[in-house]
Length: 296
Figure 1 (cartoon, helix red, strand yellow):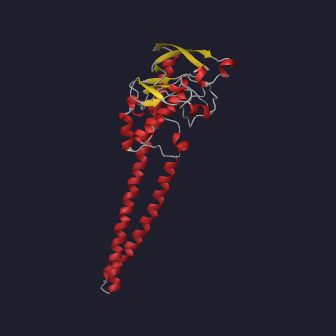
Figure 2 (cartoon, helix red, strand yellow):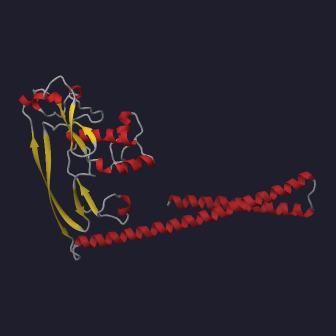
Figure 3 (cartoon, one colour):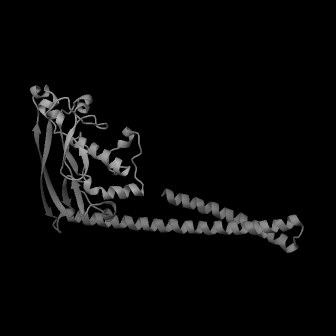
């Protein structure tokens, strides 16, 4: 697979590097690429191998209570999760990563009144608007260091059934999250090797050709924009002339209504009416040209 960065990447990303961040994850989990994954540098050839380590629980373990087994099943009933202090409104299946993501979302929404744009649409489930205004974006920027931070809470229920509370052990500032490990889990283990692309290789030739294509596309877009601006400028001039002509006609008509008009005014009126008709025709044609240009 050939993937390329374009010249605008630095304007569209918060990364401090040129390249890509890659995350191998379960299809049941939201890809939090921001704080996880590995980086592939641009200008390199990368070879990626993916292994997996699967942890499964026996039927005996599955038959135990949460307090006894000390882990959570993926299809654990929600009422059982709530009973031990785990509240998940958005994700149907339990995973520790999904639990932490939802917990951090609650923390950020409570703190900033909104969520990062790349988060899942929690607002639909919660029935609130989680889009950010300028103040919210500033708050998220201030909370950036806490996006991956959370309290490790130990649920006392696990040791004293019937008592639901937690002991907070702060590892880093952030959300207060109680998200136990899963009983069944798959850990993906990527192996990555990278090397710089040789300048005489086929890939380098492909990249050079793509760069030339992007440059040509930019030139076409630039020419198109200049054409659109030119047509818009012409349309603005025509509109301004129409307004001035209508004002002159209105002044002459006022004199005619008052009976203070002269022969010259009546002659000027005919000329202005003809000019106004021509200008309106030019405006229609220029508007059609602008619309056709935009369609291209």
